[in-house]
Image 1 (cartoon, helix red, strand yellow):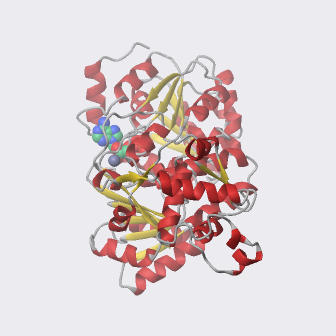
Image 2 (tube, protein in one colour; image 1 turned 135 degrees about the vertical axis):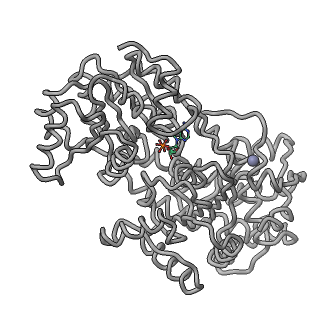
Image 3 (cartoon, helix red, strand yellow; image 1 turned 180 degrees about the horizontal axis):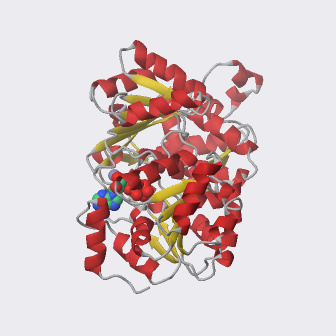
Length: 511
Ligand code: ADP
Ligand code: ZN
C-alpha cells in the first residue's frame, strides 16, 4: 500500500483521535510503518505510543494485531478505541465461545481494525489468524521480552516466531523503558534486527524532581499533601504491608487515601483504581503493581516512599504524573535501610549482577550533587546541554569546599584498619568513640583515632557517601559492607590530588 500523504494522516488524526497535530516522532514512525519496514519505538510513558500503530491500523487493508501483556490493559485500550468509533476487539481465554465466535465473524467480515491478544493466547487463536489478512503487528511493552529489562515475562519470548510466521508483515515494537542492551536484545529476539529505531526524548520537563533523606517520612508526606490539598497523587511503597499502613496513617489524618497491591481482592482493587481515575479518590498508596496502562492525565504528584530498584522503574512511575503537561511534582525518599533491603532482593535474583548494577545507578541518582534530570536522561542515552532548573539540585545547588583534608582522614583510617570495617565503625574511629567495638578490636590505638571529632556523625556520613559517589571508596557489599579504597584514593593519599566536597550546611537547608 502506498504511504498516505501528510494531509491524509493529519485528517485521520483529527477525525478519529481529535488531535490537531502529531507529537514528536509520531508522524515519522507512522510513515515508516506504511513503508513496510520494522520499527522499534522507545518513547516515555505518556509520550503517545499507541497512535503509532492505532492510526496505521485505520488505513491499512488488513487487521493490526496488538500483543499486549495485561488483559486489563487491553480492555481499557479497546474501550477507548470503540468510544472513538474505531472497531477494535480483544481475544482471550476469559471469553466464552460465543463471544469469541462473534469476534471471529467480525474478523472474517473484515470489520475489525485492531485485534488485541496476550502473548499466551497466540497459539490458541492461531487457526483463526490463518483465515484473516494481517497488515501490521504491534508489540506493546516490548521490554517484557528481555531478561535484561526490568519486567521480564516468559510468554513474550515466544514472540520471535511472529516474524517467520507472518513473512513480510511489518512489526512495530514499542516500549517506554529500554537501555541500550535491552533495545538490542528486543530486536534480536523478535527477529527484527533491521528495525528502524525511533527514540523519543525522555525529557518530561513539567515534572519537578526532588530527593530527600528518608527520615520522618510520614510527617514530610503530610506536609507535602497539606501544600496541595486537592491534588491527585500516587505514593509508591516497596511492600504490600507498607501501602496499607501508609494509607491507614493518611486516613487517620483526614486524608482521602487507599491502598493498592496485587494481594487485594480483584474487585476491591478495580474499585480503587476506578475511583482514582474518576477523581473520587485522591491518593493511592501502591506497590509497583499499580499504574501500568492507567490513563489518567491529571495526576499532580508521585512520591516514592522507598527507593525503587532501578531507574527504569522509577522513571516509569514518576512518568504517571503530569501526563497532561501541567507542572507536577515528584519526590523520592532515600534511605540506606532501603538500599540494604534492595540489595538483599537483588542478591537472591537469578540475574543478580544486572540487578545490583541497576540498583547502584539508582543510588547514584539519589545521591547526586548535579542536575538530576541530566543524570536520568543520560541513563537513557540522551544528553542535554543545560541544567534543567527544575530539580532540587538545580534549585538549591550545593556549594563546594576543599575536602582534601577531610578525605585524607577518612582514606587513611580505612587503610590503617586494613579495609576491615563498614562505614559506621570508620566514623566512630575518626570521632574517637568509646564503644565496645572500638575497644574489642583495639581501634583506640589506630593513629587516626579521634582525629576528626569536630565533624558531627551525620555530617561524616554525608561526606563518606560523597567520597563513595566520587569513586574514592567502594562498599564491599558481599563482605559485610566493608569500605575499600579504589585506585583513585591512592592519588589523594600519595599524590596530592585535591578533592571537592559539597558543603554540608547546604544539605541542612534542603532537609
Ligand atoms: P503511551 O502509550 O506512550 O504511554 P499513550 O499512547 O497512552 O501513551 O498516550 C498518552 C496520552 O497522550 C493519551 O491521553 C493520548 O490520547 C495522548 N496523545 C497521544 N498523541 C497525541 C497527540 N498527537 N496530541 C495530543 N494528545 C496525544
Ligand atoms: Zn536539574
